[in-house]
Length: 220
Image (cartoon, rainbow, N blue to C red):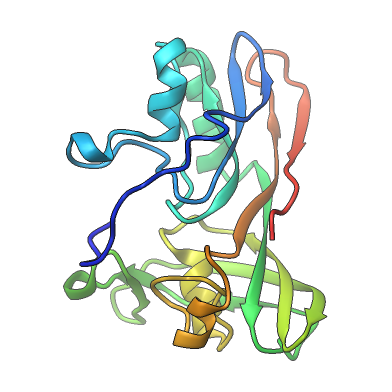
């Protein structure tokens, strides 16, 4: 992240929140403000992956969450598990949903945003809608509650582009509250963090073939 006023100060308590662990996988609850993987430079080394790998040398990342997004991540603890779970993500065989609090009252109880996305190079790390050069991106949403002029929604990303949920909600006219990149000034001031949380993740265990579902409580 390269915002001029950005200072990386990741939370340290708790150091790690482990939801499940066995010989093949570890499932964690990442806090907002912690990188999924190390960034550039020693000052950006601290991350969920780095913390896990301090005690589990073979752990590898199979998917990521944005710095400001909290919630469920799974890591593989051996190469066969990594291949198996990575394939599930690539083939869209996992099920996941996020919870977000967005600005304004979303009119439709459910719907979808189907807009192609690309990195906004002059304004990195922002992304933007680009109908000519963007990659196909699809998000489905469902209203959970309308709360005091804002809306709590469940977001179901069909594709997995960087900043997809954040840009799609902005494009819908309802940016996510607390978003330092895409919210309105009032929306940024309304919460101390990005109100986006990876709430549930389902996938198949790489060794046993068991269907697994993990859920994390929404912290906002």
